[in-house]
Length: 501
Image (cartoon, rainbow, N blue to C red):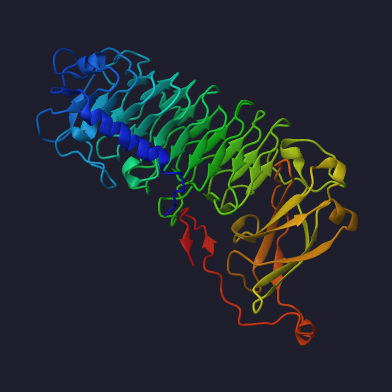
């Protein structure tokens, strides 16, 4: 199961907001009427900062509210909590949700809920069948929390009741949190026609964490959005989500305003337990049209890309630069794991003067990789044929155990630095302690990332790990011990399933 590492401070604040709302005025929705006393419409219209909207509709299963005109916007400081309805709970996954807001009777283009103020909580609802977006947050500047909702499905979380727009759209909004670090905060966002989550160009510093985006509630069955997450803004965080099964890209950055965003520790193209593939139809992450300075994976917080229809990560367009792609696990994707440009591997060019996405950074040239089990050391002999004038030094060379096709890095092994003086020397030999188990016969690939953040493709040819020569053992420089098998190798059967061997 994937992990979460978001600071819990934000989620403590959610609890504080809910607690504050509990002590403030409570406006109760007592029926499923479109308007009038006891209706959701009347409750939203009456609520002011500090108020909480609770539900006490007759008991007995799911209660469906069908607005026939657009609902009024939710005021700043208001909480709408569907878990207050009898028998509803977000304590475990899957949650039990009892309040459904259905847009099938709403006018063309209507959104479900509109949030325009700060300090708003939307929790424990089913939002589906709107011809606009299910939830739009527009112009809020802080502390909007959207958690434990089913967005685009029925109450079971298994049927396509998708919205015609995005599941959640953020417009000119800052510090909105979609999901959270705890299972009780997870949203299911599926079957939406434009995107599961859309972050507009003026939306920044928002967090999308821990959600299921593109699958049903089990995390094992495709229930696709068109794109999983579309990011046009800056400095947003995607952390710990399951982003799988979407029609096109898992995550799409396709404008120049998409800059400084971070995508870490997500499952992209796998099921929730990372035991089978639910591929996105296109790339796992697709960056183009000038998307710059984005981080896709980091050492110790890599994403796991499984069997996506195109690449694991695809960077396209000459202006798409300084996109760091490090520490990820990639296997079984339909094209090469990291693609710079269009549809083919880029051969290294002498000195690396060419321009293009991620500056078409040359890949490392691996000469030899040896493993001494007794010392638990990998020793690599390699070079990077990039003139110092054509990259920002030093370069970080990341080594990976290759997948079964020997084309992608399945598990991160370690990093060695290659500085300007190394380029003058050419080929260097250095050692590191591997982060995963290594054995003779494994295949290794590598990437190079310059100090500006431009990451290369994987090396075109994997190199086989060898055992040091006996003569080296006699000198005592390297002591051999029993080599152990690495813990995981993956295959992709015809049915698309990924299973451990």
